[in-house]
Image (cartoon, rainbow, N blue to C red; front, side):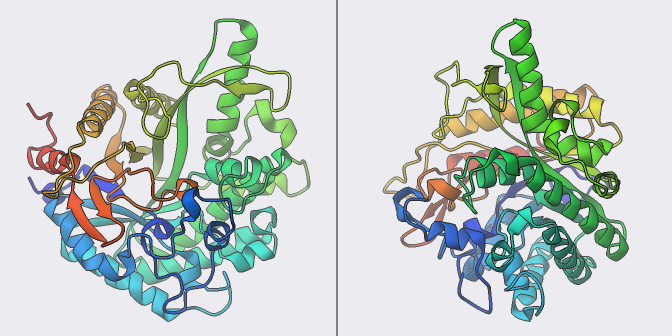
Length: 444
């Protein structure tokens, strides 16, 4: 079934991110990003691996797009490498970077694949990090300048934009816990960095609306299903606090113009806060849900006042994360109820398992197929209950550089042989292609 031909298609797609797939980090004028620096610092990445080559998508994009088409994807979520456009994050524009993304966008459209473009998927130009990064309020303005250029250059063909990918993960993993670039470790940075990220989002949305006719735009939020460890009052309160920190710290300012009351004391009160919140709360068309985690939370005396407990089940992915498909439907219905008036996209959903390539070039991954079947069914149940779900994007299209975990976890529905860069469609990719071709009805 060619879903792209219907008047209001449901978007069945897959997702990737620039640093994780492109490679070519020193080619055609690209500048250094914080992930280049972080990955080349000893001890940060599993086995000392880097995204220098990644999956070589920069050179192999034509074959990759052709493969997407063969899998019947009618949409593709990708991201722009900011330092490929502005090598220093601002200032001189690198036309070669613009040219690459123009070719890629045109190639997708030629194959009837709708591009969903993420403007920021964590790869801040290192030059801006040297100027303070997201701790520097000016970075929000520089992000808006970059977004202004990209929407001007692509907006004649691209209508679906995601300003930020997972702002909470950029905050927590990058600035509090330190396992992601830039590798800072300070709880006090949390609301400062979030404020500047969301201010950048609001300013970028203003530029996008001015530049792109009939645009559809939003954020891809990292959202977890959160439950209290017990029915004790202090654990219930801790779960609400954890939800405010993990989920609502990004949702509330952008959709309601306020920080959650549970963490408001962590936000610096100054004479620009009210204006910042007004800018953050730009009208959005959709809410992107990136869903991987189910957390049980209990009270803790030490800051931040709660702790996340280990999973209570042995049904774990290779990342050590619980497979909890019902949580996706629960989150979707919650989002539809709490933040009405927005379309909902599942902008990431997927799992890593220890895949093995056979001598005949096959990858049998029944656990991933089961994972996808259960999560899609949970999403469709929420949709049947009235949630305005408009798309589902598997993470990820192909195995790639998985941040601090290097190349070990394989999330793709396409297997990447990183030594030869050959691609092999896994059984899960074949299942997904047949599922879409079958009209997106459960396969018997």
